[in-house]
Length: 74
Image (tube, rainbow, N blue to C red; front, side, top):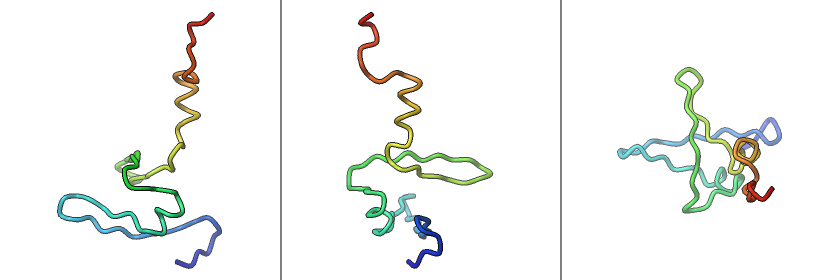
């Protein structure tokens, strides 16, 4: 797909009978999505559905829950 804005994409996916969608090949390649990956879906009834890139919430989770290191050492 020819992109007018660098790094911006638009794809179309069709929902199957079981509610499944197929992520287009180019989208999987751009975002490094592989079979078995888990994706987070965010939904807002007014704004729609978003699928943030893998790792997008790492910083947020570390801020909320710590770095994963044993915080009880002190």
